[in-house]
Image: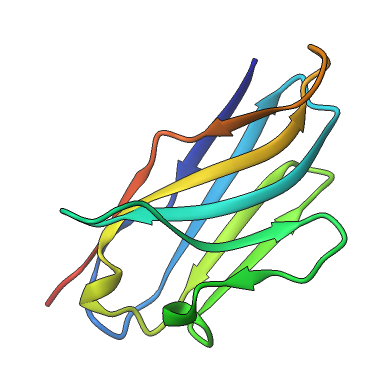
Length: 121
């Protein structure tokens, strides 16, 4: 079994910064991609930024130029540096690992438990 644990959420004023981290633990042979999703109150969960092995990071349009995603393949971690935060960035942020080869045969996908980010003055 693989577990994803997020950290780094909190309350920040508009224009501020936060850094989210996600660490995957367990029997992991490989992971194809790690993605940050978010879900605000009354909204659907949306992908924010992610990294797939062998490709450039991708971002949703609303965070381009403000957020930076980085992945450490050797450590099975992914981080999200969020700058110039806006109230509309308020949401629960989830870490997602896709295409995980956990030695059980085939691949699986996993979600973290989520971390709250609140942008408010």
